[in-house]
Length: 186
Image 1 (tube, rainbow, N blue to C red):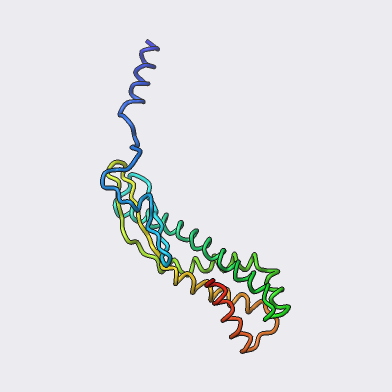
Image 2 (tube, rainbow, N blue to C red):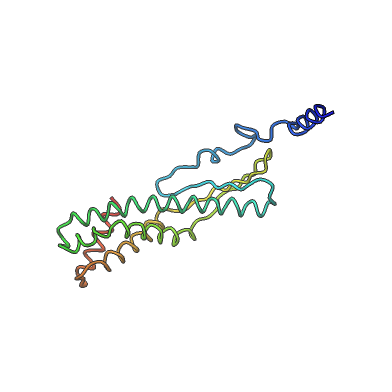
């Protein structure tokens, strides 16, 4: 009797076919696997877990997309702000103050990238949704214009660098702002 129960349990537990289908589902948009690429726009795709109502699934997909977007923003700003601070440190225009700024550059760049991410996420929006009919996962294609990211980062970077410098008058402030703008955009 015991062997019969084991066979019955195995057949019930393994029945029903594959739970997930691999490959591209019918009607699946290309952006699921390959979000659009543009120099002036960041695109990300978020996905929700299965088994949610439409409204909740969309919210979950958007939350996932925002998390991914924040990571993209932080990476973008860290790279550009880091290069900008290195340019400032190598500049002779601001004397010893530039070296002081460079000494704190790692923390500064981290702070600037995180604040920029928080500041600019509100400018993002969902361009399109798609729900996989086979497994119920919902996808959200979200976008953010890079101009908003860069403007927020430049403002944050300028404020942090200016605060680190010992001597700042109106002319130095203007020169510093112009230098940072130009160096960030390189």
